[in-house]
Image (cartoon, rainbow, N blue to C red; front, side, top):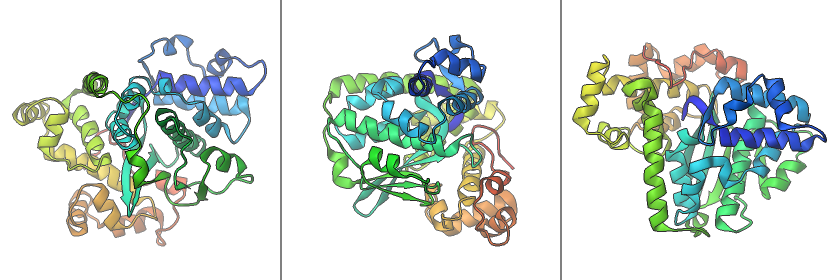
Length: 364
């Protein structure tokens, strides 16, 4: 899910990791270089803006001066790095449930990227898509996100787990050793997506601190906090973020599911949207259009795959909807946006696509 903030708990992990890599470097030095007031990190449950986080990553990378900083950040991640979400995950019954709960509660970790659970025969994928194609230090931050996810899986299960495969969009570094060492499995670079690929059987692995009663209480609290945070931009903004979450969790983006996630009735949701001058259909179209533009900017994704990710039962239905939104078919939009080959896939090409952030209002 994409929006306006990143958990201070996670950002502190980035800062402290960078400081620990350089003798004599203190966390305050990283913040000073980034121009961020240390008081901004004082609240354990607070968030920093995406702009602040960009500057912190830039400062950390410049001071640490290692291309493997993202891996180092991932390696240092602890359940506390994920704040309340980490507690929810630790008390879940099994690894699969913990991952699904993390997807639902993404706004409490950070909204710089889209987390999705995908499926292949006998496998479960945890995919991570950056907020934008030209995201600051994108490759490094993807390394950190996937590395942290793996370390958390190892901690909460108590086993030195390794996925079947790790897929990274980035090109292979000169020395891929640090990546192989951290992930402990085959790392496929230039894969067209960023994902940890797990055996389906691994999802049933029980967790060390599993506690049904505690998990139920923590999850209810986390969902309340999540709803409160999402409601900050009014009901339309909250609805868009909820719809992103439903799509990321591969659930149907229906008005009933959205109302349930917002802890309200369908009638109350529709009244609130009417008062804001919009409708459920318009907001769902806005989210789907913004995500469609992002996905279509990835040459590796076929139109059928994009349609499935957006919750359309058939590719033809998606094609008709996209033409209604933009006046173009998805194939035509790709040719115009990415060049006649439709295969550039470069950050500059993708970022010029007009793909709007679903946290904004991308309605045509």
